[in-house]
Length: 435
Ligand SMILES: [Zn+2]
Image 1 (cartoon, protein in one colour):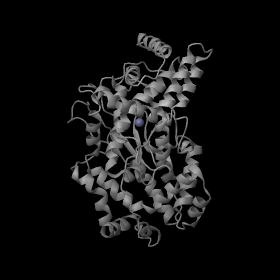
Image 2 (cartoon, rainbow, N blue to C red; image 1 turned 135 degrees about the vertical axis):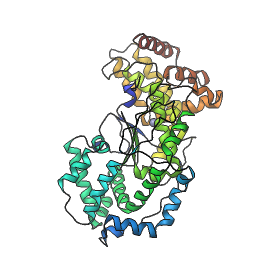
Image 3 (tube, rainbow, N blue to C red; image 1 turned 30 degrees about the horizontal axis):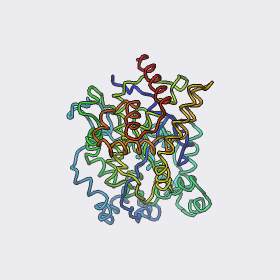
Image 4 (tube, rainbow, N blue to C red; image 1 turned 90 degrees about the horizontal axis):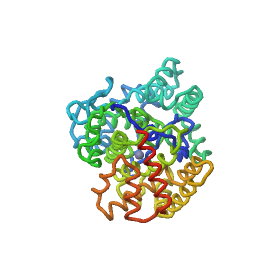
């Protein structure tokens, strides 16, 4: 099969921890790497565009001359990993097991269209409708802005944030709270880092990061897995918020998030690639939200695939603080992680109720809602406990099979009641019979 067999791997993030929901279509699953990174250097080059009016091309030349030291620190890791030309206009393809056929594919068209508009607004020019249309026609922004309401919001935000005078943006930031503040600060960084981001992107395109990330992801898969998989998944770069998201047919990454990640960006991409490899090898049927056991399978699958993938990029708990990103995310993650065993016990108790519930789907959904950050926290805990007791290799034996993962966890850390395990086994048998 060339297509991903598990739609539930692409499901809704019903709790939207960073509040970008207004600008994000569903279904999506959010991912966030929280590894340590170098603090970014503040931009000086943005002034070239807004103040001197030299235009993008001139600003780039000036920035390259003046800001070379900045670029050097950003890109050393990329250069060390070797240079490789990337394709940017053609669709990716190639069988996974054929390293030569696998083509790298970073889609930067959304960024180019975004920056074209940003630069015009920064110069006080009226942006032609054709440029807005071009922006929203790119695959990245078709995903981010699927309807007129969201497109209108993005237009308004860009007009406010990128106008020559930065005072209105500062005013909005000063008055914003919570996630709105995070969003406007992200816009502020789009202004500040305008030229650094373009230089960073150039190095990214010249690097072998796509291939290296995929190789890293496969190190967390059993050997010989995902054979026959056709690789068609581009990584689409854009600017929307501090996040990376695995979508149905592409991985979407915010460029500032990638920039902030520095050398750890490779691990973030590998995390996303791992989800695709995992889904390809799953023996479970595709389920729609209206079908029985949908919420149970979603919860178990999320625990498993995020737990495994978090070992690639988060690596160890507790997470270490880092600059930028979503405020309080690391603190919240660590607090939930410290209570993960307690949460899983509550998860078990809720599942026990499914057996006698009038509406089991509702109870399964409630059980799913007990998990934190879409199962990242408790899944990471489960995977780490298994690795501690049985060794990391044991995790490879269950890839694609969330039921087996649950049982393995329970064998090293007894958590689930006999009743729940029996009910889950019966659900599993039903699902496999549907195959
Ligand atoms: Zn993930």
